[in-house]
Amino acid sequence: FQAEDGIRDQPRARGLGDVYKRQDYSKESEALFRQAGFASTHHYPMEINKGNRINYGWSIIKSSSSNGFLPTLHSQLKVSWNLYIKGRMTAYSGKEGAVQMYGWGLSFRPGKEDTPSNWIVNFNSGRLYSHDQVRVSALQVNVERKLNLKKFPIHLGFGMNILKANPYLQFEDSYMEKVEIQTNFINVGSSTTFFGMQLIPQIWLAPKYSMASLTIVGEL
Image (tube, rainbow, N blue to C red; front, side):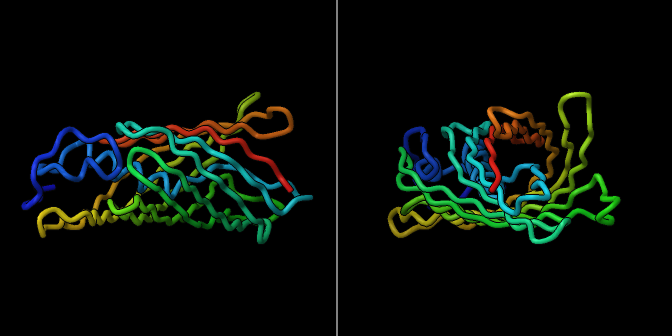
């Protein structure tokens, strides 16, 4: 990506929005864009038991950017044996101002009910707003396969995240142009039971980005 014209130099930034004030399009600003794109499409591998239809979770997300931890609430609704609808949201205040994020998605498992596939296809989209600083919308598609080990299931996946970032702070009648980033990644996760809840650690790895999350999930 090329440097954006018309944005004056500022001191080193630390928040989601402050980083966009610098003239050069830096690795740090790109990492923060990617964090917003990946966080707004974050999901976890979790099957809902036959007796239940809904699960809910709380995630803490940390990426390779300079920004802090991102708390997120999740829920999943089982529509049929092989189709899930998912939602996520967060709202908090930090150095970067008021941050709001929401998203939704679908998970589809091919095969038949008596012989389901070990593969799952996930479609997720989301948006993140940082007050008076940036808007990021993202679309993510990935495929995951479940491997059953002795004690811990392993979920391996790969996919693509596409985001559009629109920094909308104004500096002396100049705006930074929209930024589009595509990221190919692999993801690895597992799960274990902890006091009746599911504890799900995950990592995402890409050439210029990495992210880790820990999610606690219950069922209704």
